[in-house]
Length: 104
Image (tube, rainbow, N blue to C red; front, top):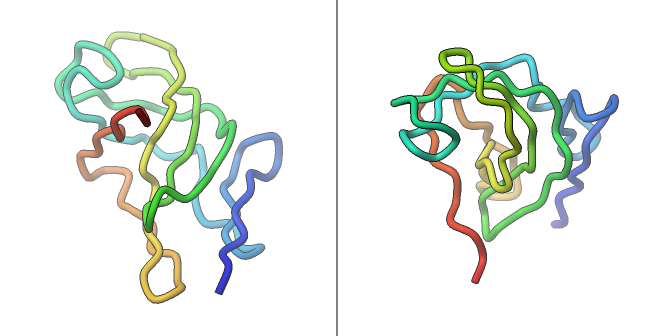
């Protein structure tokens, strides 16, 4: 069964099958060195630019700012959830996330 993914409200939400699932209002905990030199980095997302599926992982392109050092940058591949048995399971933003390696 296909999964419909898109961004809504000028990048404020990720919609999965026409249901708002992931919001930019969360602070994501990113592992050291992925976004900035903070360990870990607490990044407040400002907007989702794109969303797609990589295998069973839902990844987003986003823009955010580190709450500790102030670095503001884009994140090319932030894992925000996974598809299990055709259903979306969001990741906990407070759990330490690492950005997927760039596609080769």
